[in-house]
Amino acid sequence: MAGPSREIAAAIAEQAAQSGIELVASLPDGWIAALIETFEADARFDHIPVNREESAIGLCSGAFFGGKGSLALMGASGLMTCIYAITKINYTYMVPMTIFITMRGRLGDRAKFHVSNGLYLEPVMRSIDLPYTVIERPDQLGEIRRAEAHSRTISRPVVVGFTRDLLYGESG
Image (cartoon, rainbow, N blue to C red):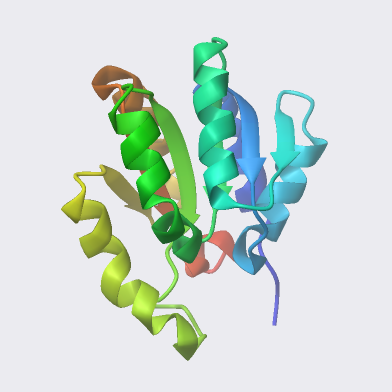
């Protein structure tokens, strides 16, 4: 079985750079391994690996106050663990940021233990009015720039979710 696509990772990083992203805080996830490696190797980004999702939210929020565009990169379950940090920091103080996540549990996910993410992730985001977009095909990658711009407009986070098929280059 092939792993995550380096070409898709490079295209995502290019969209992030065009959006003004300079700092990337990430947590490991198998689906985004190539993306993490791409951000780490790309001189346009300061990549900071973190050990907790809340740390990514805090670092990216601080980057905003320092005038840097930032994004937090994590798995779907990671996003669900940092709802309090998002609502406390970003909603209270109107701090924009982009959050990239894996759309675990969706069609194409081959791990049945991620089904709960597929059941609850989107309802959780809707319950706190967290705007999100799901990218399933390479021709949708321009949504990254739109999401970053929307985050700045509303002064709140916006989530960009990537499906397994996209990240593995299997979406067509």
